[in-house]
Image (cartoon, rainbow over all chains, first blue to last red; front, side, top):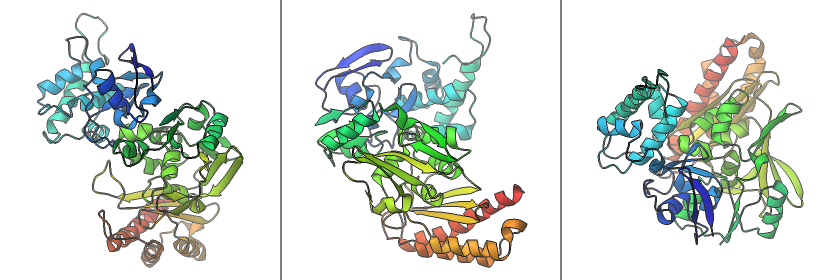
Length: 168
Length: 289
């Protein structure tokens, strides 16, 4: 089948997609977007977290055809060209990245959390990231990274004269 | 394989009638696992996510009618005050990603004995609305579940909605699992107390071939509360009565030993959850006086 949707702001079309392919398969195999990772294929690990029409979902549990005409944002859509998103910077600085396989999903899930809750408590972070599994770091530095990102995102932006507020 | 994408309910029913083997898919949190692992290859998918009215809910004559496509996130955010038991259960489902996609309609369609929405729906005596191109029928929740992952739904039918009265009193939900998130229940228990009707409702998950109620436990507790006029006085309930309530709930289960736990553990945990759930609910009722 043919699947047309908007991905990271750009209209995209995938041709000859098998009807049983997940959105994750469409992104990775048909649209050359391998940022969303394929690990468990059952919604347990969160490595394939993306936005579908603004809602955080596991791309492996969305049937490709269900994304028809919808708007998808992947981890590739968060950075501005070569400039990393503050959430990505915070993950690097806090040492929250080891093997890196879970990182794209965690970055998207953190982005979603900070959009809804700009200054989350540690408990809120743990609950929001409960569906994202990391097998390297033990989560302490990941939680540090989320706090760091939250702090950065609400600091006044240099030179914009608008003061604080999230700039997700 | 075919991909069917109706945009209206009438169209969906016509498609299901024409393709009775088509697998309905909404949030995909169960269906896609089967597909990704190649456990099941249906001849067709029937995507229900384009039918706007399925993700709507409303109040009609004092009864909530909640569309089958309403997600757990919606239930928590929009119906948490009216359906607190179901909202508590919804908060234990998966993760934010899963709750954003998973629906009660899908939970019912899978009819797993471990489905988190089932015990609170049983405890509050909800009704499921099934439809086909031949018509609509409504079934009490306890008649809907007929076996492990088997329901009374016919092949030409789809789940349209569930109907339930807004909470008439405190509701509780408890679940035993190895983590606070992303966990299938070892066993679970839901309680609804309805002071106006002098009624107690129960629901047991993951401890029988289907989700079940504990009618003897309900009648026992209603008897205790009535006999001592406790609905009026709101006095504490005797420890012996609480223990007996727990025993009767455990006795209503028909658990098995499996990878998640033993039958004996499930019975024990159910008795504890039942007792605690009632104390929490009763304390809430007493505090509301």
